[in-house]
Image 1 (cartoon, helix red, strand yellow):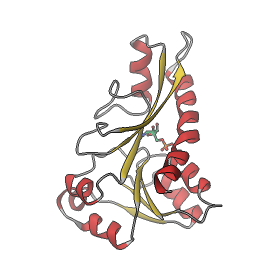
Image 2 (cartoon, helix red, strand yellow; image 1 turned 135 degrees about the vertical axis):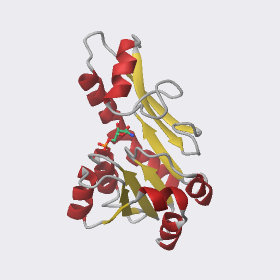
Image 3 (cartoon, protein in one colour; image 1 turned 180 degrees about the vertical axis):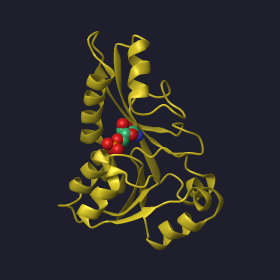
Length: 186
Ligand code: GRF
């Protein structure tokens, strides 16, 4: 099975997923799509010898260029890992129930456009939440809105900062995302 990862940032989740399938013959990451020149995930692709494509806004939102490319590459599952653009309807429809995302909070709270990275953790802390966590979900035409696949929780302590909470959340992401990808493909 072929996995395509969409990412905009450091790519730590991408790295964990790549590593997870290194010793498996059931699936592998064959494509990385990125919308940010210079993003860390592009260095990971280079190091791992995985084809990386820098996506352009215009064709991404107004043509079938990438839908056709992903179909030609026989992609079975699209994994968003820190991808900050909304997925256009044509791609959601072409890959119905085959696009997943991970969000660093317990949706439906603390989701939506602009809620990513430390903004999420700051909002959780300033709201006085006693717990946070991750949400892995199917992607539909709206931000952070598709059916939930898995949620995992962690405590939020009074002394937690956005940085310390991010660390706990990242550990959950790195632990669970590869396992969910494997489960969905098997
Ligand atoms: C993670 O917080 C993830 O939950 C969110 O974007 C971030 C990606 O981090 N979707 P990385 O680029 O995988 O390190």
